[in-house]
Image (cartoon, rainbow, N blue to C red; front, side, top):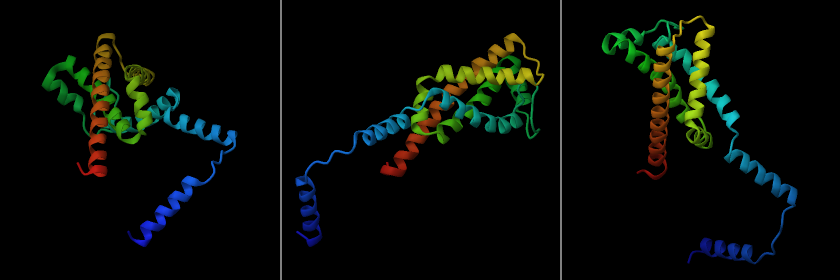
Length: 183
């Protein structure tokens, strides 16, 4: 046994034999409350954070694919490519999937695991609200939103959002495992 190991053992035994000290109850309660709040963030706070991230990602997304004729910067218009390949109907589904899916992919990498847990528990509600607000934004900017194309777009946005969120979480988990465990 080395001297350092022997000292550690003695210190640990001394720690175990020390009398129990109870911290003041108000400090204990405040620590437990804070831990609980950090592990269980409120849905509203999580959604507002999602909305902020979505607003930033939308600038990029709307530069790649116009949504209902609305485009921020004309870098590339995937809508014309989608329309020529799959037609108007599936184009709306793909555009919705790209628009919300890109944001959902970013959520899964940028937000905390506790926030992602909340999103995943209520993904249909969260993504439906996000899609509805996005559709409302397009309406407010003067985009021509018709019933059937918007239903197809929302369907695509929900499917793309759920798929991207789960894919991003899976990739994040694999990256974390690789970094921590080298697996």
